Length: 151
Image (cartoon, rainbow, N blue to C red; front, side, top):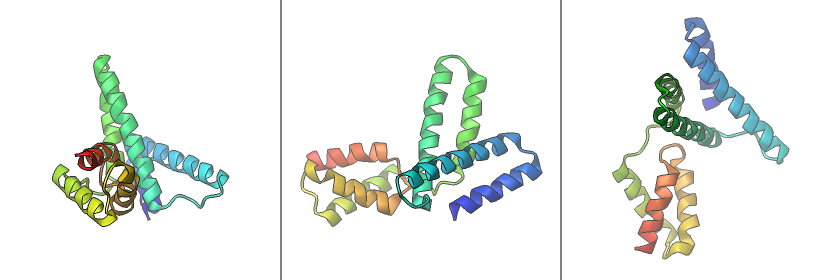
């Protein structure tokens, strides 16, 4: 389970005295616990591995946006810190799909759902999310799905 892997990595980082990794993993654990609390408040079960992957992807996206802002602002040391955090968090995501693999997955999902137009976009995205959680950037994928369905 992904949660156990992260907890074990926290212990290893403590033993290795790797401060950057330790603080990043503690932040990841905190974010996951907050998401668990939110889910419990909504009457949902604790986060599954797929939900945790979505949380990790969101954290990476936030850090990528921060890197852009720090680079524009001339704050190289803060941008480097964010990049290090991205590297630590990315280690827990499955291998990301290439652009060609994403396009093939989209084509397969369109065929599978029998999607004929923009009204079926939600069905296609739902299939992609269940099959490829954590493996593709769904922001980019939705643009590709939209192009495939409208073209």
